[in-house]
Image (cartoon, protein in one colour):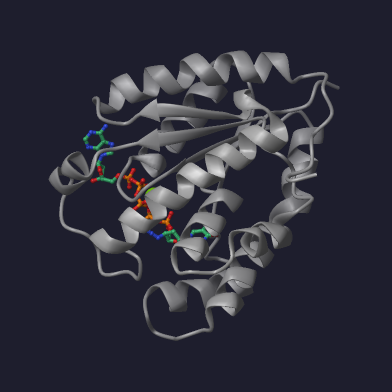
Amino acid sequence: MPRGALIVLEGLDRSGKSTQVDRLVARLNAEGHRARLHKFPDRTTAIGKMIDAYLRSATDLDDRAIHLLFSANRWECHAAIEKDLADGITVVADRYAFSGIAFSAAKGLDFTYCLSPDTGLPLPDTTLYLTLSPETAAQRGAYGAERYENVDTQKAVRAQFAKVAKEVARRHGDARWVEVSAEGSVEEVERDIWGVVEDVVRRVKDEPVGRLWE
Ligand code: Z5A
Ligand code: MG
């Protein structure tokens, strides 16, 4: 059976990832491609609840401990994702391992260390990185109350995402990381994302699923 594609949306805070993943899943299903959404962190699992408490600053954790929990949160979902892909269902992920690296490396953890726990996860067929200027981000409302939702952190994370993009291109080829401007209207961004995804979903049908960082 033709497999589903693994499509990841990444980007800084308020770049519109959650808005766009919902639209993308709806569009895929409407066009006859079965599709399912996975959000990372998945705050519903036992590990996800620990992450949620940390993000709300209800608990404190060592930087390495929380880094590994974010990765473990992906590993506990990987079997379900792989099953969906094998069953021909396209999986759309709202953040993935790349957020894990960017946010932890921005805190000062070693970049190579940050990559390693996610090694072997299903490799996204494409990652759409939504780009947004700090000025436009500021117009989309004040930062929320969660950890990381402040200007300095977002600036450091942006720099780390640039390193992640280079690493993806070096290990897996240029086509796996696509920058999409998130400056336009919701409909404009949706159209640009669809322009990439429609092609990827058709192209990967008969290809094996790759392994991240391998
Ligand atoms: N994190 C980590 O450290 N390690 C990891 O491994 C992972 C994550 C996976 C929680 O993530 C935190 O976890 C996050 C990274 C860290 N910390 N930060 N920052 P999350 O995904 O749960 O965070 P979120 O709060 O759901 O997402 P977000 O990044 O803040 O927002 P978004 O999903 O990109 O944007 P949105 O919710 O779709 O839109 C934001 C607002 O803008 C909203 O009012 C929209 O109506 C509006 N919007 C959206 N698009 C547009 C356009 N085109 N024009 C105008 N207005 C728009
Ligand atoms: Mg979101």
